[in-house]
Amino acid sequence: MNEVYLDYNGSAPLDPRVFEAMEPLLRNGVGNASSSHRFGRRQAALAETAREQVAALVDAPAPGVVFCSGATEANNLALVGLAEGAPAERNRLVVSAVEHASVYETARWLHEQGMAKTDVVGVTEGGFVDLDELGSLLGPDVLAVSVMAANSETGVLNPLEQIAESAHGVGAVFHCDAAQVAGRLPLSMGDLSIDLLSLSGHKMCGPGGVGALVGTGGALRGLRPVAHGGGQERGLRSGSLNVAGIAGFGAAAVLGLKEREQESARVEVLRDRLVDGVRIGLRGVCENGDTSKRLPNTANLHFAGADAEAVIHNMDPLAVSAGSACSAGAIEPSRVLTAMGLSREEAFESVRFSLGRFTTDAEVDTAISKTVEAVTRVRDMTGEAFGAVG
Ligand SMILES: *Cc1c(COP(=O)(O)O)cnc(C)c1O
Image 1 (cartoon, rainbow, N blue to C red):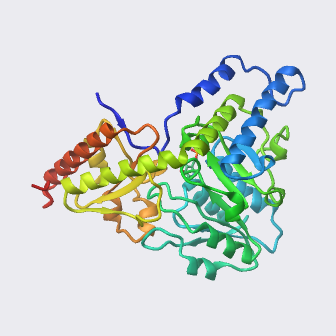
Image 2: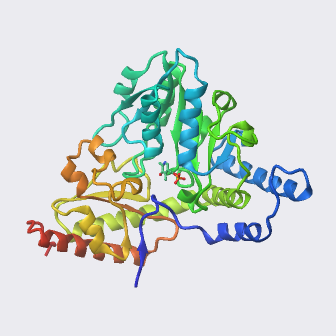
Image 3: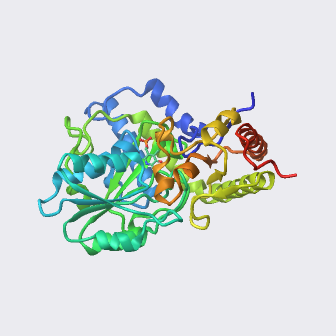
């Protein structure tokens, strides 16, 4: 069976070089990084090296890196931590309509709990945060604005500098979920004036179950911890460090920094060839989201008249995604696509292709033919008037 994996935005494969960096630690890396004996100190030193590596990837000072279990936890720590630490007169959160569930649902939960008031800012047809609407939602009571760098479903890149400027204009913190951009495109917290930034290891060919919230000193001082205990990670995230995972995350950050430019250029060519090939083979194909400012690895395609779940089922062993991975299996259409103005039906007919470091030319060929075949079959079954071309 010729498996082809085009679901990098859901989870990217572990780079063998990252595995090599982790293997000795998994085998022999005994010692709690909080212990003062030599074993513990050795583990702590490994974590500190990784802290510098992760900080370098996002152009931030190493002490601002708070390791945790992934971007979900980082997003929770950012929003819940801010809400808990906020002065009474700053109790409003503004999040975009296309945020990952770990931001969107957390903000909603804080609202329901009465811990913050949450406003949702919409997006344009292209998938960008609506800057005019954002401006109208901002005021002196806004605690934080949370907008992602790149959307996981469409790859659309938000205008982070303008968002930061608007947030700072009312004294609010700017939190950015950068899980999809880190290791793919240049990302400087300083240049973009980002106060808090979330990262995930397994989205950048590192291990799963590890990530970080990176913050400026001031923003981190405004947070209260979510996990209480031994006071690790500046007291913001208690728990014994997952040193092998953290070292792997660090190794993935080094590779991301070194290879992102070359890799993005290569992957973009493959992505464009995939989309062109599918469009040559099929009528009724549209790309969702702006195609000029998006991740080089992502394409979200609407196949008119073909239910995405049925298409995906017929594509096996080609792995792609309908809606975000986190809402896969749910019967609701993608919140991201409907926020961009797609109808429920159109959202249910949309498929995300996300490529990456190990995607080959031959895999793109397979993906094109599998996609054309699957969409044609689903349309034939449902009697849709879109056949294969020619
Ligand atoms: C995958 C993802 C997350 C969740 O990251 P985990 O490390 O899996 O918890 C959050 N935000 C975005 C944008 C993602 O793509």
